[in-house]
Length: 87
Image (cartoon, rainbow, N blue to C red; front, side, top):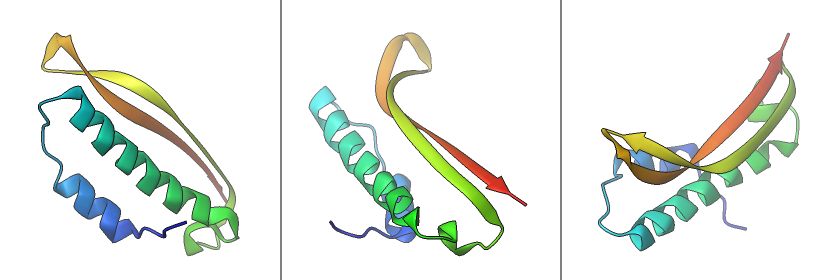
């Protein structure tokens, strides 16, 4: 498994652009999901994210369709839900 850093994820988001075809959207989406899940899965050892105050950490993701601008045009995306319990 390839390790992807937070900086690489930020660079990918910063360099995001609108694509012309659904195939391009899917390729970008899959790469983004892989990058984010790699970082989240790497948090299996405590303390999560290197922060001693985190007691519990869980996450999930799902594919979703987003509207942006025109409500009749939908864009494929992913929604990540991250739960962090601190003390």
